[in-house]
Amino acid sequence: MSGVQAAVLGAVFNLNHPAHVVHWHFIKLPLANVIVIALMLVAFALALVLPFPGAARRGGDAS
Amino acid sequence: MSGSSKGSWTVKVREAAVEALPPEKLLPDGQPTYVASWIYVFGVASIASLFVIIASGTILALKGPAWWHYTGVGHFFNSIHMWAVELFFFVMVVHLWGKYWMAAWRGGRTRVWMTGAITFVVAVPTALTGYVSQQNFDAQWIATQAKDGLNSVGVGAFFNVTNFGQMYSYHVLLLPIAVVALVSAHVLLVRRHGVVPPFELDRRAAALQSEGADTAGDATVPTGARS
Image (cartoon, rainbow over the protein chains, first blue to last red):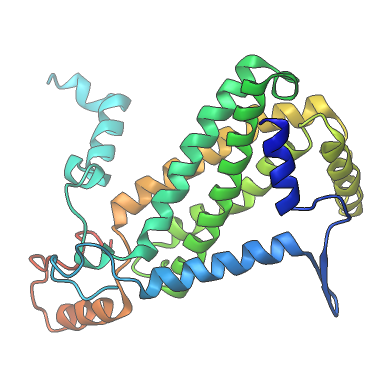
């Protein structure tokens, strides 16, 4: 990665600070982990509702 | 086949293996209709991630410690390895959620569920030993944090996260062997018992069986699903 590319990425993601932490009662999680957990929940929900290519052709009603 | 070879342990093992997993079950050319859903994709995505982890980890092991810090190619493979691990856990957790909510231990699939659950439990220390084997400040930070947790449960004397040699051995040999063995067993058990059907199909199959109907020809219920 060139210095210019690194500078551009650095402008988008400012990492020059302590990690952000989500603190709610006894739950204390880094923001990055909270985002990953949220993405997993989104992937799970989408997997349940999005139609699978070719599912209708196979005669199944699973989606 | 001679009479004496029938008592051979190799023959017994072969016959037991073929009985448990005949070729058409081991390498099927189709899956039940209900498998055409995105939620069933996360299991094979976990295996695909594991392949990338093993391949990139093998390259890192061949080149040895420190290569991944001082060369661009080494850094690239280190990143591939790390992000494949992130993806592995991401898809494995979604796979776990999917199987939990469809009660995938139904129909005699207890061992399928248990091998999957144990794989998850073993994969966690496999990843941890990788993070503490990085040989950088991140590794030192994680190791010093983890040692307190491990000491608090009394295993620090046997599993010392500040001992690079021990952690590296665990990471590149002992734990990967355990994970690959468990995943292999998990996949073979899935082949043996079939992919767990949706609740509705399971109820219909049970009703048909209770009526004494022959369900062997029902294409939507995998053979051996109730074995």
